[in-house]
Every structure is written in C-alpha cells, then in structure tokens.
Image 1 (cartoon, helix red, strand yellow):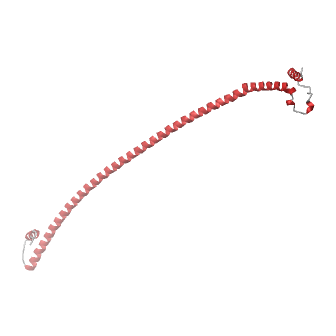
Image 2 (cartoon, rainbow, N blue to C red; image 1 turned 180 degrees about the horizontal axis):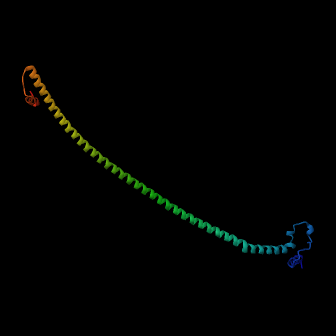
Image 3 (cartoon, helix red, strand yellow; image 1 turned 90 degrees about the vertical axis):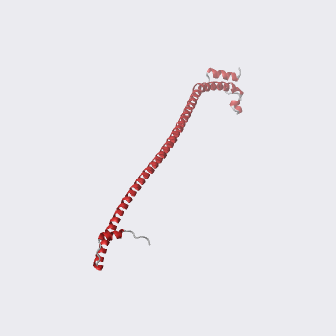
Length: 190
C-alpha cells in the first residue's frame, strides 16, 4: 500500500494524524505533493457535496422564492401603476369635458343675459321714448293753450288799451269787441 492510499484510509477511518511525508523536508508546497492528492480530492468531494446540499436545499430555494416574490411584486406594482395611469387619464378627460361643458354653459348664460339685457334696454328705451313723446305732446298742448290764452289776454288788454287811448285822446268811442276782431285778423300780405 502506498502512502497516499494509506493516508486516504486513515482519513476515512477517522484518524486525522498523517505521517509526515518523505519529502516534507524538501520545503515545497504540500498541496502540490502527489502524496496528498487523494486526501485533497476526498475533502473536495465531501465539501462540494455539503455545499451542494446546502445551496440546493436551503439557499437557492430561498433566493428563488425571493426573486419570484420580487418579480410578482414588480408585476403587481406595474399593473397598479398602469391602472392608476388609466384612472388619471380618465379623470383628466372627465375634468376637461366638465370644464368645456362649464365654459359652454357660461357662454350660453352670458349670451342669454346679453339678449335679455338688450331686450330690456330696448323695451325701456321704447317706453322712455313713448313717455317722452307723450310728455312733449302734453307740453306742446299746454304751451299752445297758454299761448292762445296769452294771445287772447293780450288782445283783450291791447283792445282795452286802444279803446281807452282812442277814447281819451281822440274822443273816439269804439267797442272793445270790434277792436279785438280787428287785432285778431291777420294782415294781408302787401
């Protein structure tokens, strides 16, 4: 049995004490010594098997579950974001439609108010004009009556004055009615 087989059998048997190799005094690296290859391969296989079991059984499923949960969370968040974006777009469209409708209603109200004001103004203007014309006609009648009365009174006064003057100065006695008739006649154009 060679030294490497013997070392392997000792490691498998549970004894960790190895005999010193013959070339240990050479000062080289022991891991490159061919007598240690068997034990290095053995421990490599054991370590790899333990690491494989730990990674395959514990760590990788946890990492996979975390990645799956993260992926699902991201997809859920993206779906929520898309739904919110769609709701925001719908709300914005509704707000724009509402604003446009309010603007149209305001324009219609302003137009109706303008027409109403115009009609009221026209009606008040016509009423004022009719009243002013009626007042002017009434004033004209009053002025005409007053002018006729003033003319009549003046004619009577002038006739009385003429009768008095002619009677006192010339001694002519005339009737006041005759003088009034003469004063009221319009002189003919010469």
